Amino acid sequence: MRIVYIEDELADAQLVERYAALKSHALIVTDNIPKAKAALEEGPDLLLVDMYIHQSKIGYDFVRELRAQGFTQPIVAITGLSLAQDVERCYSVGCNEVLTKPYTINQLAELFAKYESQIG
Image (tube, rainbow, N blue to C red; front, side, top):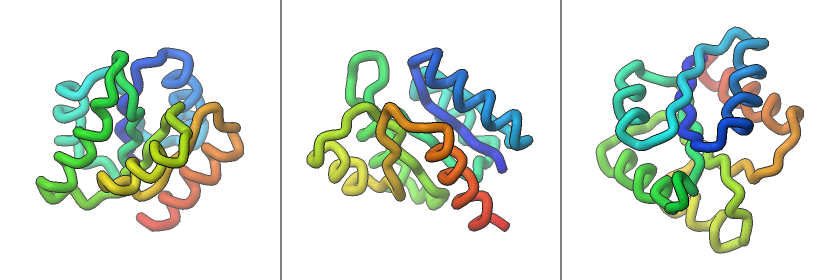
């Protein structure tokens, strides 16, 4: 599975990198929106987005923009913004799912398995 992950926290990115490598997924990690847009040209099967990047909630705008442009691949918010209104906002801008931090490796494994089975 090809995955793009927008994450500005190194430790969070490293956890996902280790797990993706273990499962032989191709993962591109970026820490900002311009790099993420470039990475999307690789045609990922799954997009993981931290909603709060560099002390700004720009992840929401990025997802909304992608959906408006016709991006149809699954988008999962991986975020520490876990209040009910934050989670609802993730869905309202076009996220398929929300994984709130801190999450367990089992939750990450289930998430990857779910989308891996969908792309078959």
